[in-house]
Length: 128
Image (cartoon, rainbow, N blue to C red):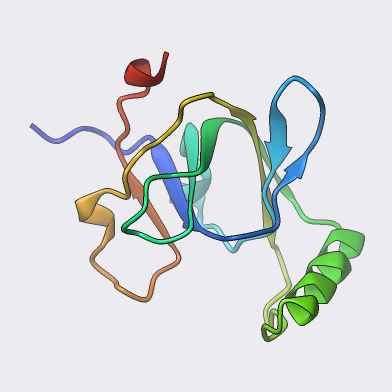
């Protein structure tokens, strides 16, 4: 029995910002389609083979501001990476961290080995 996708999986090593002391975080910006933007949960991974190092319930997905895009471009430069070429309509994922989140990148989301994002199902009740 296949479960309905409920989680957006993203590969990243940096660009996470704490919004407040209640455990609300913002990720750096992504190009997300409508289906990816409809996910309920968010899982950040350093590689597809590792368990997530952060994750939780999506509170909001909003458009990145020009100042955030400039700051991210500077971060990319500091990390020795190429700047983003497509900066239009970048999204920031705002999420409430769930302690103990350690989801595994789902097999069905590994179809494209070069992809930095995927969707899959996570049984969130096991993290409660």
